[in-house]
Each structure stands twice: as structure tokens, then as C-alpha cells.
Image (cartoon, rainbow, N blue to C red; front, top):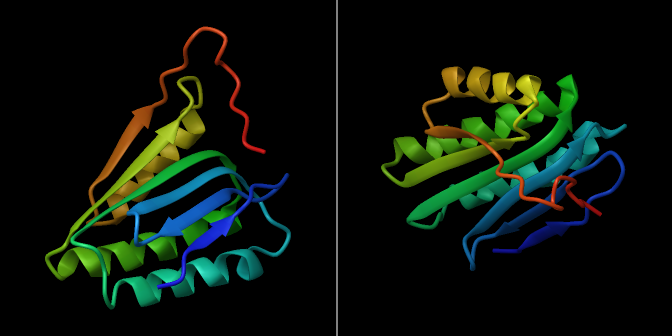
Length: 136
């Protein structure tokens, strides 16, 4: 299965979907002008992935900001993971947020309430001198 790796830009997150190495991550800002165009390849990748998945799948969302259109596509990704979970595979999502970002924490909780896939909502640990995240 083809690996997807998309570099982060001002309005789009870093994405890596690597079945071979079991790395599934979406990190950064997500408010693309053309969300359908950006997320369609990712949604298609997950549609193919659930046909022949790894025994365990852990997707990490480490988002700083998302707009409502991006949330729609994140929800679609989580629906695919719900389908995968229903087949008996081990699936989990880690939803990371900055300790002072109540909006991202709340979004994680809302998504958790709507999906069967286990979602852990975790404040990121920020160390001294490392209080700003470099995404690109």
C-alpha cells in the first residue's frame, strides 16, 4: 500500500500514513482553502487501508487549529476507524492538545462521544525551552 506523506504548510497539517511502519499521524494547522481537495486522498487511503489493515492501528491527531470543514473530514476518518474496529482489529486514536487549549480538548471530547473507536485525549507535556512547536 502506498505511503502518504504530506508536508505541513501554513493552512494544512503534516500527514504521514505509513502502513508498513505503522505510523499514522496528522499534525499542525488544518484550515485549507480546498479541504475536499486536501482530505480526499487521505479518506481514500483509509478506505483502502481498512480492506487489509495492520493488526493494530494507532492514529495520532496533534492539531493546533482546525476549521469546521476540516472537522467534517476528521469525522470521516474516524468513521473509517469505527468500521475497522467493528472487524475486531485493535484501533485507537490519540488526540493531543496544548494544555491551555480548551477548544481542542473539547473537540476531542465531542469526537470521542460520537465514535466507538477509543480516543485518548491528552494534554501535551511541554518542557523548558520547548514551549513552541515547530510544524514546518
